[in-house]
Length: 232
Image (cartoon, rainbow, N blue to C red; front, side, top):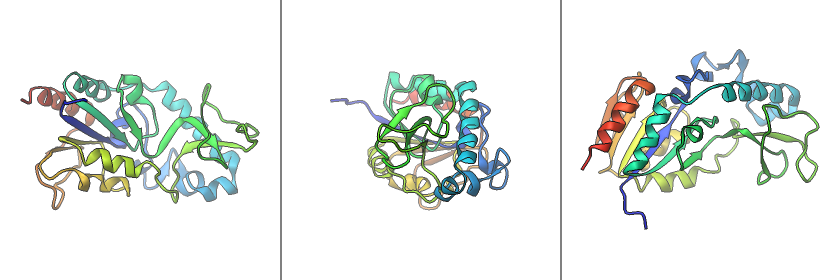
């Protein structure tokens, strides 16, 4: 049994932004000049499948070309001392490519596809494209393995269970505005030490033992990791 203390890290768009991956919240509901409702909803998929596939193909190419930043790399060092669970809203694989072992994706993974009919049929994508006419083993079109607006977040219960066991809870690069994921901070134990890392971070009503770090992830996280590694 792993007796080490547990660090649970929750990462949002600000984590990946410093690797050059843009987010829709940077520009008033537009994501790379697309309206979110046109490319990231079940209705958009039914209305214009080709547009949705192309949009995510371009995002996938961008992710493949990106590299983990100093914050991603720093979190790996925590595993020297702690049991580390990373819960991320991000759909890229930068945590995994940095070397983190335990990563839970709340909103899906852009480098995977899944059946448009059978959600349990999930596949790794070779290269950066899903094309119209590519189908799962049961003959249905493949779609991005992404949780779109209006869809349930299937990993939410698992994420809550992980957060509830945290000795340290670290939020990085999240505005804590996208629900239900933003509610996770409420499930951290009251006595757990908590850190909120974001240039625009503010105190959260009712959340105890919270330290605010108003800096970007690549600057703040390596220093925070050093601090946690010195904890008794």
